Each structure stands twice: as C-alpha cells, then as structure tokens.
Image (cartoon, rainbow, N blue to C red; front, side, top):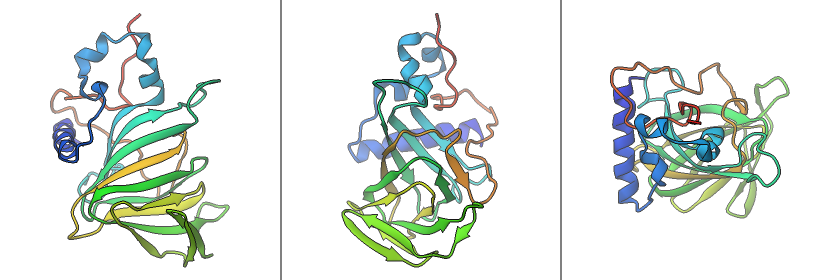
Length: 227
C-alpha cells in the first residue's frame, strides 16, 4: 500500500467516526514527530499495539480485500499480573470489501455491528490440519444459540453481534447496497503477530511504499521510547 493511500484512509475514517459520534483517544492523532518525544510511560500503547491498523492483506487492492481497524485497548502478550485479559477494537468495512478466511488459535471474540450496513459472515469449523471442516457450525448471536451448515453465510444487522470462538474460520464483508459498516470487537487479549491462521497464505500487515510522510503511525510502527 502507498503511504498516501493509508493517510487518506485515516482521514476518511476520522470523518466517518465523527459522523457516528465515536471519538478516538488522543494518541490516535499523534504523528511521527509526537512519537519521538513520547517516553516509557506510553509503553502500554507500544507493547499492546494500540492504535491504527490498516491492511490490504498483501493483495494490493484494499477496496476489494482489506480492513481498517483501531485497537482501543488490549492486555498485551505477556503483560503479567494485573494486565487486562481483554481487548477492544473499532473497525470500518466497506461494501463488498472482504476480510479473508481466518481463525484465531487462542482468541474468542464478539463482532458487533455498531451501525451502517449489514455484515455478511461466512463460517467453517477448522480441521486439525488447518483446512475447512464439513461439520455443522455452532453459533451464538446475542444470546441465541443455533447451528448452520458449513460454509453458510450469516447476516449481522446493525445492533446485532456474533461470537466467534477460537478455531472457527470466518470471512466477512459489507453487504452490497447497504452502506459501509461500523464494527466493534470485544475479545480476549489480541496478538496479531502470532494468533491469526489464514486459510490461504497471505500477509497480515501491508508492505508500505513510502511515497509521502505518515499522517499518523500504525500500531506496528511505533519507535522505541525516548529514555
């Protein structure tokens, strides 16, 4: 992805979130110069990779396959006693924009449609070898427990949520003609470096063409604390 594209997506996201009256924390708007002056008191942001996360999953076509996320809170891997055992994200999904099939080795998560269009989620159980299993998929949506066939698609409407356990493959996209989707995620501690298993070999983080200066840094780009 070009840095200019990432910058533009950040600006669009801020505008959309303002329309939805969802304010971001102050560190969302710290640029590279700000981070150079931030000391070890902000290591909780660095270590937990809080903040912006924009990816095309290595495919080079963000509008088709991609996702924009902002991690609001996260316990952090190995954070020790007293650390949060949970994480929270806000995400924006465009119409027909796909987040590819993946599951998490450890993380259980609730995906919540906070408004806008409908989210379409396709589901499979996983095999021990990491493939698609043909068995029925058990679901929980807002207190309702039921079963769908392997590969079925479930619609998550504004205000609804779906629970995704560890090991359950899921692919999601915004439904055509319903508008972009504002998603929330409430989960166990999140570790995007090690806890994602994609069905097809793709990249979790984008390769970036630095065609301009960053507007804000991604959560994977913070420099070490000034000491």
